[in-house]
Amino acid sequence: MTFRDLINKALFIEILKGLALTLKVFLTKPVTIKYPHEKRPVSSGFRGRHAMVRDPQTGKELCVACMKCAMVCPSQCIYIKYTGAEGEPRELTKYEIEAYRCIYCGYCVEVCPMNAIVLTEHYEYASYKRQDNYFDKERLLKNWDEHIKSLKATSYSNKFWKPLGIDIGRLPANKRQAEVELKGLSKDDLSQNIKEA
Amino acid sequence: MEQVEITKGSDIGLHTQELTLNMGPQHPATHGVLRLFLELDGEVVKRCTPHVGYLHRGIEKLSESRAYPSVMPLTDRLDYISSMINNIGYCIAVERLMGIEPPPRAKYIRTLLAELTRISSHLLWLATHALDIGAMTVFLYCFREREQILGMFEDVIGARLTVSYPRIGGVRCDITDGFLEGVGRFIDEFPSRIVEYETLIDKNRIWLQRTKGIGVISGEEAVRWGLTGATLRGSGINYDVRKKMPYDAYDEIEFDVPLGQNGDVYDRYRCRMEEMRQSVRIIQQCIEKMPKGEVLSKDAPDLDMNPKGHKRLEPEMSLWSANVSFSNEYTTTPKGELYSAVEAPKGELGFYIVSDGTGRPYRMRVRSPSFVHAAAIPRLCQGHMIADVIAVIGTIDIVMGECDR
Ligand code: SF4
Ligand code: SF4
Image 1 (cartoon, rainbow over the protein chains, first blue to last red):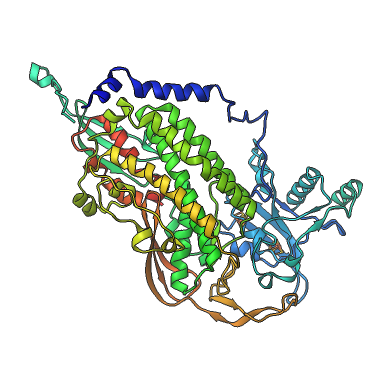
Image 2 (cartoon, rainbow over the protein chains, first blue to last red):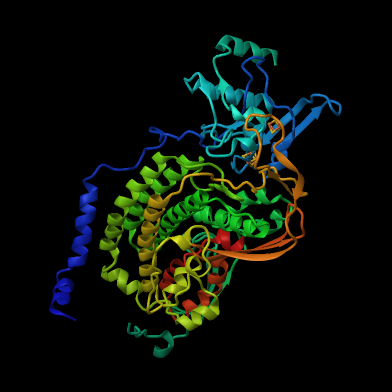
């Protein structure tokens, strides 16, 4: 042991250095966010609660019941039923997502050829009732209404509808221009539609 | 380190007996749900039996009923602290199986994000390891930096922990220049943060006494136990999958493999700290060399891959035609089996896939480092005191999600 080491040891130099550092950090601004009172900004494209896009023209969902999302879903938590004969447009009769089992991979959003389903940036949906997070079609459309109300924009596009840098030839026709106009209907019209539905 | 003399009860005529103790599965220092069945003589560990399986979710079995692309999000849940590297490991295994070569930009993006993941994983390791041993401050500082990395992941792919970012044949979406700048800023600042952690614990005498000479294993023995990663390199064996079997862009990038000498808890700690510095070096080179171009190979299967096989994108197609621009034949996955490994922060993460020619793996086996390392816990805490068991669990950086799968 050199003399220097001895001095270091006797005078607790290393400990003092550490304490100086903690004192320095103690005097800087804390990085903590006091969560329920303050919220951290969520980046766009965050994979949160599901919603089904409401077509601004018709006020109904865009889904054509192609079953792609149910097929690709890794946790197989999308349940779809439809009517309609072979070769005719299908009528969606049931569309349910069990959010408790969903792993938020975003695959359903990415494969949907109609841009009908989306994972919104909304992440606070804990609930006292299990039923609240078992989304049926109406609930999913309501999620969308809530989502666009918070947006304050005229159009919306999701990161997974048309992923950045993916060859456009890979995408089905509807996904090449991936944007929904939000202006089509006023809020009154929307509530009208909800009543009708 | 000299052995502490302990006065035993039996020496002074008292009746003594061995004590059995269950450490875990609900023990904060066992990093999840590891259960150690300890047989103690006083405070000295006589025998130690690890019990695993409390976090078993059957990921290997689940993957047999899903198409190759849909298995990828399941691999997030192996080692949930470094989900990006699990995804990459899986994607590389399937790419090698299908004979797909990802484009250079995708390779560099993956390398960059893999190293960010390594830093975040090592930060979490340092945080919890230090907390277990009693250094609370480091824990808080590490989480501060880790939060920045998770924020960057959120920008890229919309998830912080279970990212599912790569994709068979490339990555799911491109990164922006703004993201690269953000990473650059983080990387410029990060080395000074490492110095901060080291100021706190590197020469701290409590830290030294708790880590030096604990859990010693020689290089030769470590190899025989199948240890990999920093747990092996702490014993001075130069084995790093990134160097020995390069994948992605690692063969075009310069970095060193830090080695320890004594094979104790302290040397493994030093190895991981140096690895973080090397990761910074790799990221810097990735940012400098980042090529332009595609991020997904033309041969890459679609996400909604047919169980029969996948269709190839035709190279000549009109961009705006709504016609199907895929070839009409299915490219089937070759029959056969394959083992492919990547260097995860914990050690060598291997995927062994048996293919029967369909779009689903016939069998997928994950060689997870934590499982192998869990087997070595009894060897590492032989003859140590009960408090050292905590240091040993910390030093092998065990994650039960990966161990039990
Ligand atoms: S996000 Fe993933 S797990 Fe959730 S519903 Fe969509 S495909 Fe299924
Ligand atoms: S992929 Fe889209 S259009 Fe097809 S069933 Fe799912 S939500 Fe409907």
